[in-house]
Image (cartoon, rainbow, N blue to C red):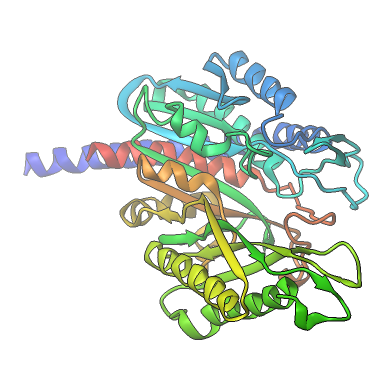
Length: 431
């Protein structure tokens, strides 16, 4: 009887401690909300392009150093990594935010609207945080401040990853998560689990959406060079027309999706985004160049689609007497959420947003280079809503557009989520 009473008292003490911890997190996240919004709006007004996040990195590094967090700069060109060692032994948990903006001109009339321009591939372009990375940085800065204030209660180590170039490095440069991983961000100390979030303009502010297994698509880029025979536009029979052949290839690629792929297993997208050919209206040119993207949510389907694209382009070209050369560049892996990790950590998200505001989402054909961290440790990536309450998701301005907009009043929910994940993962790892 005494043993049972002792066990019950121990369980009750642990339960009270967990409740107190959760209350502390909620209170601290609420208290830092005003600063979080201030940081986010400053970053929104001062965006920087991929691999050029110099001032953003300095802003982040100064904040982390002020908190007494060990800081490493210049990782993967402009990345910042912070290391917070807790007061107790335990696992290493990584939290990631991406920092780069996009070459987009902002159209939303805000007091903190971006007026920034920068050089991109030899051109002067407007720059905007048109995908919400400013909110990701601010959320992780706030998370670092909250966790630093609870350092003695943390079991293990927290690694804060502020990553450049998620949107892709310019030209032939290396960058983004692949370079972060290559330079050892998931080692020294070795990460046991990695978490990340992405704001979403079509999900109500303060809500969380997640999915176990494949969540976001791989992103591959392709080029198809079609070589024909040049002739005068008035005598097409003397030509091998690469434009007509290219158009037939575009149509043929769509049958891979509509007639050859089992989309019951997982979605497939093939989009031709560029078609270049010719210099004059009365000349049938010698060459045409097609460029596009492939999105898949299954690695086996990814390889199968690649083979079908090559075969389709080459055979259509051969039938026309032309030649097609296909090149496929794998850019981003499938963002895959470790099923066991998701099942364990969903309660942490529910504590942050509320069980009624935390739900499973559908697949997304957009891509995220967060996927590369998942090759080194169990990973869990989720969405945080940023749509003003009462708005229609179907009318929400899309990401990567001039009208992109988020309600930043409930970004603190992301802070609560990250903090709960850190504490809960350590507790579950100890069992």
